[in-house]
Length: 243
Ligand SMILES: C[S@@+](CC[C@H](N)C(=O)[O-])C[C@H]1O[C@@H](n2cnc3c(N)ncnc32)[C@H](O)[C@@H]1O
Image (cartoon, rainbow, N blue to C red; front, side, top):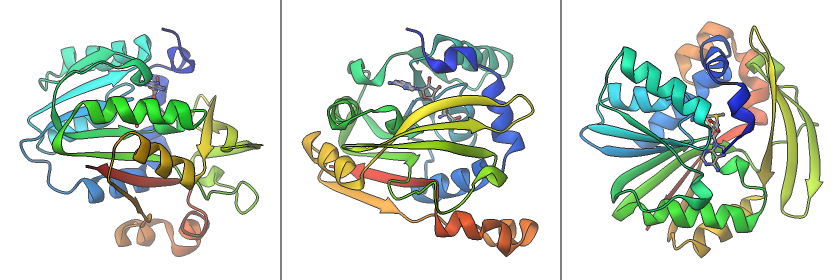
């Protein structure tokens, strides 16, 4: 399996430490997660394991990270070898992912934005639900269906969207991570109704969108003006699905 992230590998983590977008991404993701003490978590699109490690450090019992990119999984495994936390990493395309276990919690920070249409999104969500226990939750960070490239420039947050092409179920987007060694990616921003109907088709009964917040200490550090564009036109959003 080869993906656009096979050429990015370890460089992706620079973005997490150099840009400001990950500050609000992390805050909002953990706010929706709530208490994860003792949880066994399936972390999808784990990439180099940034969140898999954080989830473990924040109290999860064990995290199994899944990613389509061999190179990203190799980075995650080598970090696990260097600093063992007890996490495990496997290479799978979530679109074809089998049953791995019955988890109370599955997470995915930037997975659903790689589904190009409702059919693929439904397949991903069906496979995720297959891996959840009856009362399991799926919490994900994805592209905000309402983000508009015309409303603001998000380059100050370390991520520049330079193309948003209209499709029947959303947009095809091209963007660049603005780190010391910038790199480009493409992804999809599907409509809210497509997400909701795909989640329903996958069997989820409850679907909630969580508005983004900027924590007071971060507003204080960067100033209110800095975050205004983000709050008026958030690039990302947290979505939770449960049975
Ligand atoms: C932006 S990175 C996010 C990595 C990690 N969640 C984080 O926030 O640090 C997106 C990841 O999604 C993975 N990915 C894309 N499509 C996937 C799929 N169909 N199944 C599994 N992983 C996928 C990519 O290989 C990449 O590692």
